[in-house]
Amino acid sequence: MIYLDHHATTPVDSRVVNIVTRAMLDDYGNANGVENLHGERAASIVDRSKASVASLLRSDPADVHFTSGSTEAIELALSHAIASGKAPLRVGLSTVEHKAVIDYVLRAEGLGICTKVWLPVNDEAMLDWTAFETALHSGLDLVCVMAANNEVGTTYPITEVAAASHLFGAKILVDATQAVGRMEIDTEGDNLDYVVVSAHKVYGPKGIGALISRHFKPSHLTGLRGAHQATPNVPGIAGMGRAFEIMEMEGDEESRRLALLRDLLLGRLQALVPGLVVNGSEKDRLPHNLHVSAPGAPNDIVLLRLRGQVSVSTGSACNSGAQEPSHVLRAMGLDAARIESSLRMGLGRSTSNDDVEIAATLIADAIADVRSALSGESYA
Image 1 (cartoon, helix red, strand yellow):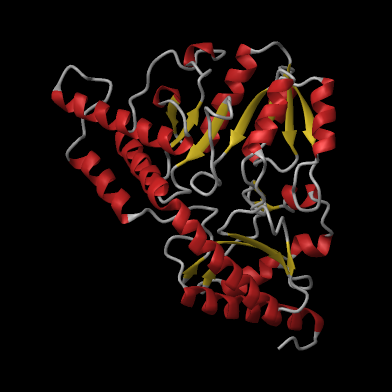
Image 2: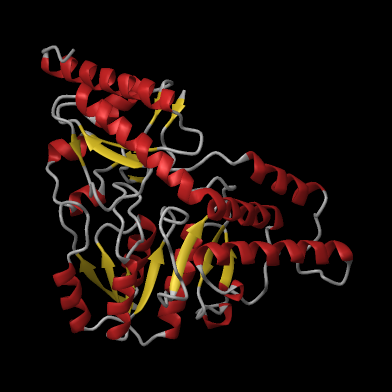
């Protein structure tokens, strides 16, 4: 099987596995129990990993707060912003934010502790700057704009968004889960108030992420959360630190290679699939992302045809086990034919030229078969 779903998750790098295994078998102390050598070693691992995460994100290690992943980091950031701001908190969020952000804001609004302002995007998922400035003028306390979209791969001018937000007195929350290591994130230089990242998108283990914020203090949260310091997940933290080290050393070169492979994949698909359409920005997008539509070939049937051969995804949200049209593609204003035939491909560290060539043929064949079966016409 060829794996082209690296936006969903990535395989753990063997160099990361070695670090995680060592932390589990040798450095197994409790990082909170520094009165003995085992605890000191574990605490040292946590400190080194904070430094590695901070280095890649241009932040202070003291501002790195480990979590169970991006979702928890998002919830902590939003909870902190609400608890430390004036009520109700006025939150502006792009219409293509990750569902973790959207769902939390909607729930908080239902409780009366925040109000939302949607920040629209165009048909390439780029932020509508005029509407954004209008929203800032109307008064916002927090702006949520992701660094890169998790479906169509569009990247955002975070430096400019942060500067404009701060000019009007608003803080900014940046979901950098998909972007870390693929585009520069300068937390201190751009004065980013909350930055969210996860290890499993960059060849680290699942179940570990971080909130990077100079503002965040657990004691600021509402309710009883943060009343007791949890035992750190030292193996996960060690793996995240190593994964971020590798991304800092190799990320630029890897991104250049993947961009070339992505362009090769697109070229092959365009030659093989009549009417193929690229979704998102062709200029401002993640180097390892390709999101396309093949009208006339519903993506759920195409995925069944590819099962066991090539792993790609629709990029659609999945709630309660039922597939729903992607909120990202709907926010972009795409028509039903493009939405229902969309496919997301994410290339990765192990993707080769041969993988691309084979995958392009298999995907094209699957689309042709589905179109033929549904229309009765041959697309060979």
